[in-house]
Image 1 (cartoon, rainbow, N blue to C red):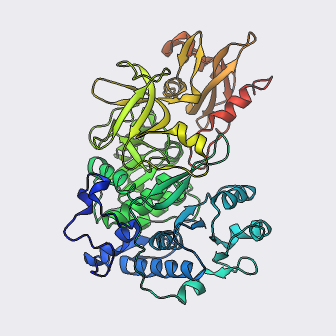
Image 2 (image 1 turned 45 degrees about the vertical axis):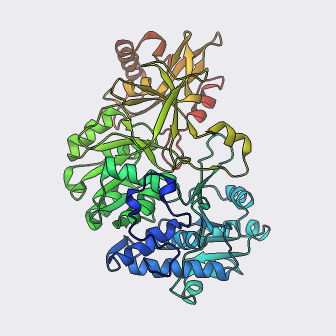
Length: 538
């Protein structure tokens, strides 16, 4: 680290810090991701690769510095929010890190959202600058001009009148930039939740948070090195994708493969064969979709490990994936509020239909409905304590107080824990329902249905019967070639009878072409619950 930098840590190895108190008070996470690699001799090493171009660490540092200088020239000050409406690309990475390096707060927006949703983000964040691709900016031109943005920067196109072209704006700026002397407790970035039950919430992360979610995962799970290249199907605007493609590889000094286009199966196979990444990050529905293709080991030859998060990975997907590719999938659990994965299986130690164990650097509790610690073997809501947990939700005090309870983060996920500390996902707290007076975890029923050879995907929700009582209803995506007829339904009913307790058996089966999902690939059960509440049940 250059001596003039406010981030001169001397002999301290950031990878060994155990608590926020081990960090210097003046700490800028962007500089730790960028400048450190130049000081350690990795300037010529490839940091980013993909259709957007190949950048070494030295080239990325220069581009990020120019982005930071450009934002300052546009009037961005410390703690000002900077919105990014960009595909996964070098422009995204450089703008994100440039904003963070000057002490501003980057906030990535969902590029899959409907244009009507962007007004909320602009108004709620009170951002000073928006950097977006012309394709996304043009439909919202009128809305942007009606708000208090100081400037709009357009990537890959002129956008609308008055916007600043990205390349021209950056090229006029110096390539040197000293990091802002941010306090370790200052905001580093926000990540918006998916907003599946209302307006999205902005989880506010601090500069000190990020190390403590990256290092335990590196140490106990993927053990990423400078020789690894990450390839994440999940986009950078998700917390999962942000760490997969930006924070983790740049922290280690490895490489990141960026896919700007939609991750269709054929394109994923093409990218793996062309760029030869070593670590692959996806979600369970993505793995299920890839398994429906002509998948074999040759298409995944460069990979040494696969990672899954976002929702619980069914054991059937793990087994079929390993049989066809020879690769393990490490199922893990994280959250936007935590920053990344805090609970995971380990290489060589995978327990089917289990999320694994909480990393020892974090503390956890299972809490019952009365607020007490759940009894041994009983189900409870998972609470997590770690220095990586976000500080609060921006402008949402009510939800902040319910989610961040002292040192604890309430995840809203229900788990059961065995004697060895392995946690098994039982569903979201809001997804549980009683049938016959007994609690039903939809995930348990879905996992059973997924073992039937005709079932590709399954989701179970509560549906009221003629007497107004809640009973399980199953929405099924059948495998290719399986007819959606009464014979198939009867076969599934018999299968459920043989493998599930009576109160868990679906009373209704609905065959659908697809299940509603968030942009992260999570099944939107609330939409199915609304559908089941309709008079016809369909």
